[in-house]
Amino acid sequence: MITTYFPKAKISMIKVDKHLLKKTDYDVKLVNGTKIEFNNSGEWTSVDCKKKSVPDELVPKHIRRKVAASYPDATINRINKKSVGHIVGLSDGTELRFSLLGQLKKSSDSLEE
Image (cartoon, rainbow, N blue to C red; front, side, top):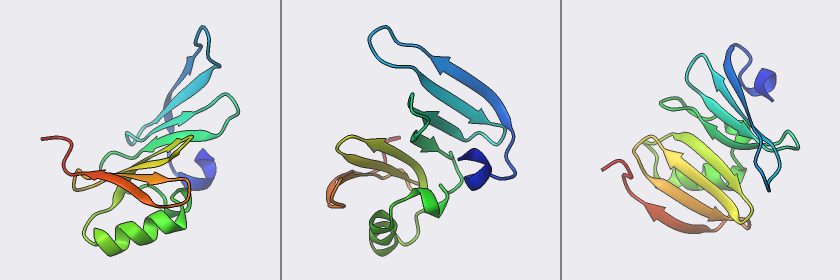
């Protein structure tokens, strides 16, 4: 996944989180500041590119379309996969929550205020 979507990136840290009742997950930090979390199956669950854009291929098409239409000046900097859908963070501080069916469930502006 890292070599496919972040081909020039170098890994600065890998952290293995072993939970008592949960399964193990993995946190990877790249030299450019990007943080990626993986579950015990090796699937990514969270990608946080800080000030850079998340690679388009990691963002479902319906989410990319909705963000482009409703927030044309913003980029997707963070995405989390949850069992109920996706949480997307935009460069303007907006956070969007999408259902598994692609419906926008909730948005909150500028979480950093």
